[in-house]
Image (cartoon, rainbow, N blue to C red; front, side):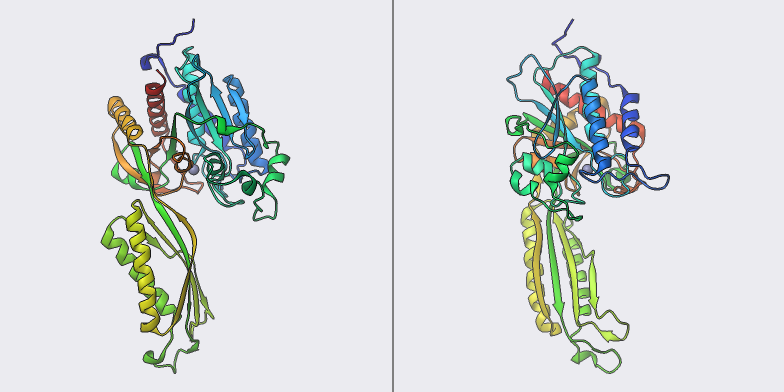
Length: 416
Ligand SMILES: [Zn+2]
């Protein structure tokens, strides 16, 4: 007998199966102890991961669709098929030597939620879709978050398919080779709402000892490449007042952006890559090239930081007698997630008695792309010491289960 009146008290997660699936998927592409797993998008190992997800979707009798960018959609149908689906998802591609949780946890928890419906023989009031987006990590093909970006119409399919990888391969050829160049028109499947469960990949929840992060926004990102040209000269014979020291100017910029970060309290600024020329102990550097990564959850503050840096570069040119140029490499506005959906998540945490706090996502996620086409929000669980993109990435099992329980509860709220 099919029950249409959902009651969260009779829906239960198969917790052990969820944990087992995380470990099974985590073993695909695994490179031995102390190393992580590597499933770079559209590689042979990632194909094996995809095949595993599809076979689990089949076990759940889902309606499986693959679109031309290789996104995998598995849908549990409802009696009200005309309703837009509630969508949950993330990605299963990884960086090199990755942990087992990033992305995979969200996709597999989505399957666990659907399994709870199946086990209770319940039909949701609207279809429920689990999606695994293609190439979230952007290791081999840029940009990252590509599958969700194409799906949300932020990048043309044609352009994405023509992307040349770091290994010289064409993305479409690789999709065809691994047999995930699908024909499904995913623009017909626009979600009613989108939820993404993910590990935090940062230290905030772990250090604040909170069980769940209710993600309300996601930082905007500004990437620049800055080049400073000075004059190489002898370190022993050139008086300080006569120098054109490109290295010194770079150091001053690093201190300047740290001051911006400390003043605003929300801005983060990083010079992560830096090259000195000639890079010799007794020569004043004549050229420095470096990256500048600035982030803030508030667009105005991000714009202000960019403007302050620009002014400072002009000032430094005169002060240090150097030439400075900058080039924008990437710019994403901050994302505000759906407030209603965020408060639904918080309500579920309070109801189930899980400690929680509002949080900003420091990393990019597929949910930020989907928020262009549907109300979206994210649920975070703590990452021990904030470590991710690393085999040491770890979240205790009971925390993983708590995150999945919140996902189930929020899904239920919208499918009754
Ligand atoms: Zn991820």
